[in-house]
Image (tube, rainbow, N blue to C red; front, side, top):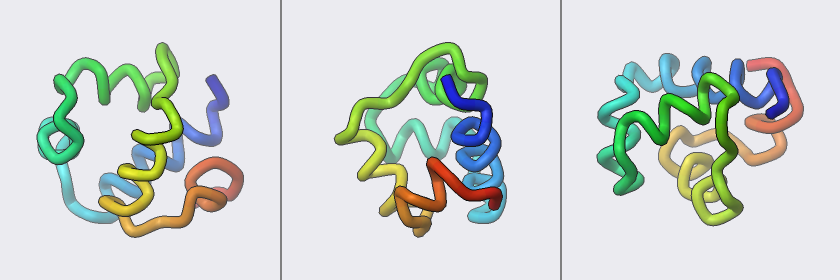
Length: 68
């Protein structure tokens, strides 16, 4: 898993003042599933990437490529 994505995902979540549990609930996944995305153990599928982008109000490009 790309470290940039993991860092950006965490930064975007914190910017929204959300916990991992809150994000997981919004996405209908278990908290450990979401935590694994932030830690780079697993990757979200494209559907989840779209949902993350919308929930965290950040573009997919920014989430994947830039430094938030």
